[in-house]
Length: 535
Image 1 (tube, rainbow, N blue to C red):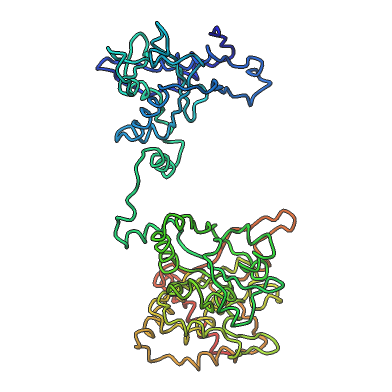
Image 2: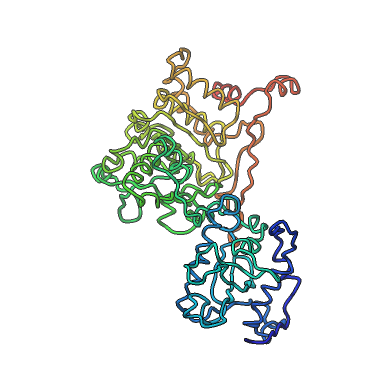
């Protein structure tokens, strides 16, 4: 045995590592000192490297080196005792997150079986490692039995606790530090427990409705589907037959880093051509559950393609996915719940609006028919992008500024109205004025219920294209200007600083309060109507 050579060891650090208060057989004990002594005992067998414990080696950490492997009948019993504590209803979570591992301290012969141990060998030292603890604890272990000829079990193992012997499980409960539960997230704490408690979750015994909810949560909150049809230049093929035969995938989520780098991902999500939005990252869907079994795979696919909302950042992606007539597109009602998250320029292209040489709508180029032909579509979200994303996403990007958000939103909704009025649930979200949103939500609700009588679709659309050329792009008519003179959200060419700030005025304060204070200020819709009437 190596003599103690504890040079440079912080005794207080060792004592602070053991903060569990425990009572053994009704006798009040303070285990801090005893557990610290167990950790110091490890250093008596394997001292630290004194030449590395100085300030010259700040990154040095003590590591206990396991002895050569040997056939030790006590090791399976110790591992069994640890596993039983992990499954314990009271202490399981803490012990599981502590992740206790055991190894023989030396290569001496085990004390069991007696015929192999030799005379007088009734105990042996074992070292216990754990997470978040640099110094393992070493303790002397023996068997509590009057007849050494009988089989030894985990319940008969005892550890030396000071001058007394206690059951091994009671000693193991002295090691965990409750503060470890605060060092991990609640989800990770539960994950560690389920990994080590030996239990299985009866997933397939749950009702199918509950399973689908679990699968939706596992996949993520929303999907960004992608087609698998390309041609040279990373643009989607215009061949309808190729689109119909191309399968679709759940996509790769949404991350701003993907939009910033890579030509393919720029095209997938719009990239610089359509301006990068300020959006939180959406992780790629976790499809690992599909590997569990065929039944689980079917449930995951159904939850993903029918339960989750499908989001599209570009009209090209939406039409390519909608054209798919093979594989998953045939098996599931996958476009029943969607979100169209286009830029204003992408909306103009989707609706067939031409800017040059004249301001008009080309019905042959309009793709709005996709919304009319989706009989399974019952839930539609229209997300209007922020003017703060930059004028590259504006139809009149050459003017080097954005157009009036209120005017463009109104034009887009008027042109899309004939194709979305039949949809049961249409929700307008994003950067749209509150009075304007409430007006259009009410109009769409009445149209869906076939109770809208005073709305002339053709006249409203004709009025848009009667706008004089000198009033294009439309100037701001908002209460607070919404114009943006930056091409994208990058405010520095070299540092690539991303501007996440938005000053868009949603006009979501009380209209009555504004009227009382200003003498009757008009809403955004009223101002827009009056402005167009004067054209």
